[in-house]
Image (cartoon, rainbow over all chains, first blue to last red):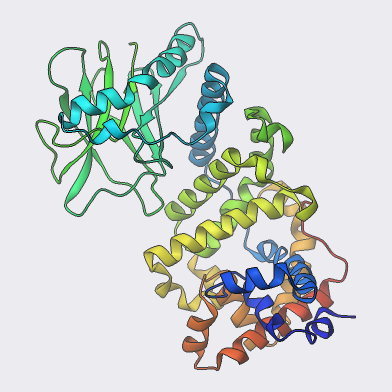
Length: 240
Length: 179
């Protein structure tokens, strides 16, 4: 018996095809329905097998090498982080109320990220003795951005910040990279960047990072600022 | 996948190498721009890495699961950015829009199965093929497609169902490539 014949037993089975194609709008009520409807569940299962073959009709294209490098670099750095800290670190960070305290954006950001600094340090120290030509340091992303990830890739004297899952800066704003040598105010750089609609982006960090203790990113007016005007959205602790 | 769920990057790398080209190809087919496709593929693989524990082998192959993530992410991106207005012609002539793809050896091996599915899709009545392609590759909802084609919603749903059923008939017991 075909799924169509089976589908005749339920009026809502007409939604099975658009559902498996991802086109049913909204899909929620049908999803709830077929959980309790054997006819529709069977129809969805059968049609899903067909839909799963559709990607095979796509003209094949080689994945770019840069994609491979970015994904695997992120995964390697996160694996290292998990090993260093335990798998509970994989859980989403809990909101830190002090993040939005009245004591000024930079100071409160320092407090909010302080617990994470030791983690970053472990990773960097592990890399000091490595013969690998490239070092990847995982950034600490603000708790207010639970899906955000970022890492700093250091190769010889070059550094590239790669981010994902980051919100786009507000209208008229752009992300700016800052460098701190441990004392005094963070120094602005000309590394300004935006992220795509999916929250991904990358930027080369200019200059020599020797002596730099910390790198951070803030949201600033277009063109950048000479002093940070908002809390850091991410921070990388460096041991150069 | 159990190793990936446990945070084993080597196991993840094997999954990545096995499915990266298919994932990027699907994202590229849907989004039409290499940079956007790269973002979608990157986000999808990182989501897979971070949510490997959710994979249920009883509900399909790793390839189907991976490409399902890519499909969902691409649709999210298309709908969020409203860039798929320009994909209205997604059912026809898309291959000409894309840059010449570079085929891999593995893809060449898969060609026989892929060709079989492609032929089955091409042999569908054009109105059925079009609604399937607009929905699956274009990311359009059934109401958008009905409006686009100036057809009743019920007709659109019916065409989708008939098309998929015919595909199933063509494919017989064939199962997803790479299972």
